[in-house]
Every structure is written in structure tokens, then in C-alpha cells.
Image 1 (cartoon, rainbow, N blue to C red):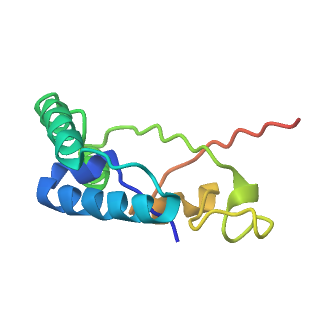
Image 2: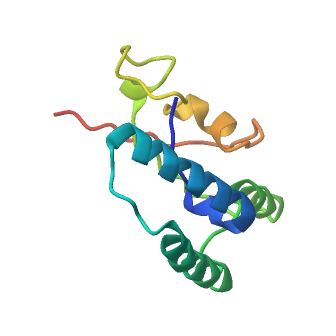
Length: 125
């Protein structure tokens, strides 16, 4: 199971705050970390969240992509992990819990199955 927070979680501050407090508790318990000033951290993160919102630096990617597709805009989507870490095609246990191959793109981003074309880039070492 993956744990952690995403920057996008900051758009729903109350939920983010609850998750952050839970993560702090987990980390303190799991790793015997010294006491952090959670309130101070949250105050700093709230300021950052407000700046990110004001500058439209965080968007709901599903809504953004669907709106862009509805406006017939072209999209460039970059992948990172490659097929060998794909949950369906990779070599266990070195896989991620989601599809990283080009075939998983529509599902991962909630795209309709009407993607015109995709370009794959392969590196060999």
C-alpha cells in the first residue's frame, strides 16, 4: 500500500489537514521521529497551498484534460516509469500498483478510448 500526500490534496484543505496529521502520527510511531511542530508545518503548507491556488498551479487533471479534449486541443502526456514497472507487464516484485505502459494511459487519466495516436519512445542501455 502506498502512503503519502499529493500536492493536489491541498485543494481540499480540510481533507489535506486530516491526512497530514495522520501521516505525522504514522511517521512518529514507525520511525521514532522527534516531535515536530505540526501546527507550524500546517501553517506554512496552508500559505503554500493558497499561493498555488491563486496562481492556478494546481488543477484537477481529469477535468482539465476532458475540457481540453472537448475544445479539440492537442495534448502531450509524458510517461515516466516504463513497461517493466507496469503492474501487468513488469517483473514482480519490481512493479508499481498502476499501469505505466502506453496501454494504461486512457485508464490512468480517465481518457475516452478515442485517442487518435500515441508515440512511444524506447531507451536501451
